[in-house]
Length: 441
Image (cartoon, rainbow, N blue to C red):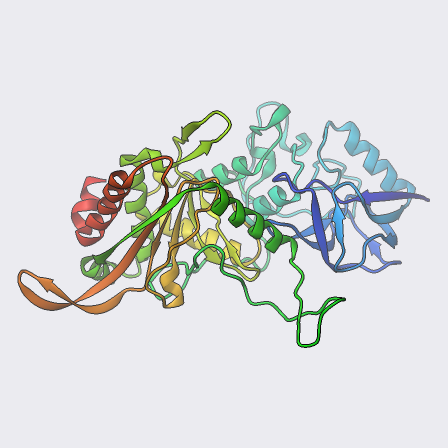
């Protein structure tokens, strides 16, 4: 028998620490390879961390509620000789800097490894599928692939030395790839809200509900709630946005009656948010300077060819902004499906991607307008309030119309008001005459 210390792995995204939320195993309990042993919260999401070792848990090195740095001891497992041989065999299989046991292929002699049935073969030119070792460091990437049904062995990594990164999995989800069977308990995405087919968001910076807590040093009548890793990240990002970006806000009331009627006539087709996303993508193609970031060191505007559309979502831990990867390549129906999928994933604690531009439906909270904070390092954010019946002048007569307020916050360093107004009118005109707009797309 030998002991192996399992340290907190690199969780990707440049994260250096995580908070231990809940242990899933007890000391003295037997664990299998790839069995989730602890639930940790990072600045990005809530993650179940699997153990790369099989054996008996000798010690848990961090209490629940503590913050642990990457590379610090997390768990000690007492191995038997067969587990040690499996570990060494996987190392020799060429896994490189892959976290051993995180789904590494091979080792048919390991009965503890749990395998998922596959719906189709993975095509690999260099070696048979069963012998190919996927190069993946981040458990977040593995979880994204598992929940999306992507077989990592079918992917060619775009990272250093062929490392599979999150963008590779997202591309596979967008175009389709040899898949694993759906994970048990997976929930098809659905995004209800005040706008049909929409994903309620909030203005960046809104605080989620959290249980009151207390801390040493509290004065009578005070309740102190420590920042979680997630709220620390939110605080840092929003503070940086307000400190660095000279933002300006413009808004316009839009007659969404025809869009509402189109949605009603095509049920159960795409939701209104999918149409808004389609019109936003089209406007970003027309005004590409808004799909960009600012390189402050070189004093340059960096325009981005691909539009990864962030969708503001109020998850169970607070506001998150998952991205629809390459939204410009999707139809309205495709956007609808992806928005629902990433919205549900975000609500479950899996954050998918960093967008290049953010679309926000704060109408889901029954408010009409917002001067939102730009999601740094993006340069703009577009938001919509609730759609209400209001008196509106049409052809000289007062009519009841479906009206929504559209607000746009932009980085004044990258453009002036004329560009912002042109972008807004492009989106607003499409909303007011959606059939013509779709025919031109």
